[in-house]
Amino acid sequence: MEPVRLPEGDLESIEASVRKLLDRSAEQARMIDSLAAAPPTAPRTAGMPYAGFPGMPAFTPPPEPKPILELEGEEFEDELVALTDWVDDHLMDVYGAEITTAAPWCPQWQDHLDVVAWLHALWMAYQQHKDPEAGPSGMFVWHRDFLTHAMAHVRGPGGPLSACQTDPDRPEHRLLRAPGPSTRSIARDVEAQAEGGTSAQDDLGLEP
Image 1 (cartoon, rainbow, N blue to C red):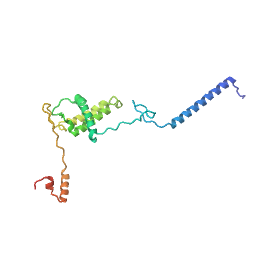
Image 2 (cartoon, rainbow, N blue to C red):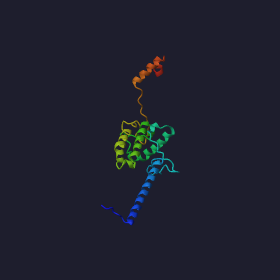
Image 3 (cartoon, one colour):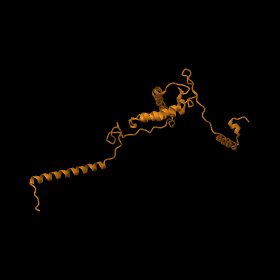
Image 4 (cartoon, rainbow, N blue to C red):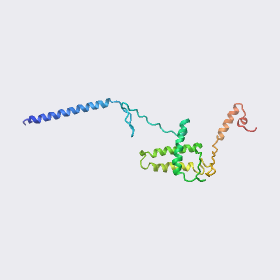
């Protein structure tokens, strides 16, 4: 077979195309080297500016929420104020219904620490399930799995508020007596005090 000879015009066009391909390949290699050498940037969340660029502050994720009873001092008071606003302006305004002996309520519910813990947990679940990331069924899940259960416990006839007066015209606030130490613990303390040379009756304030 005889070799095929191309016209000089076609040969120049092919050479120009090859040069363009080589130039593009070299440019891509330089971009890859530049990206590989670039420092990592902080993750970006929706609505936040890009971090890692000059003049841009580094993104600091918000602190993880804590149960309110794990907070102390001013941090506890601030969280309780925010919780009270949500309970008064939203929860009880929408879901409070009427006060009856079967569904008591206390205007000083902040003094019932177990009620505070329950309502704070309910509030945190509300914030989680109203987020768009929870999807369209997020609030239904909150109503079914959190609201109904929490309100049934907090406002149940034998719940933590059952000792408080239900008549709004005669409000009364009473705390139920908390469980004391078990008999075994008392016996152990009495034995320890007796071994220490003190009278258990004196220590317990009992009559001889």
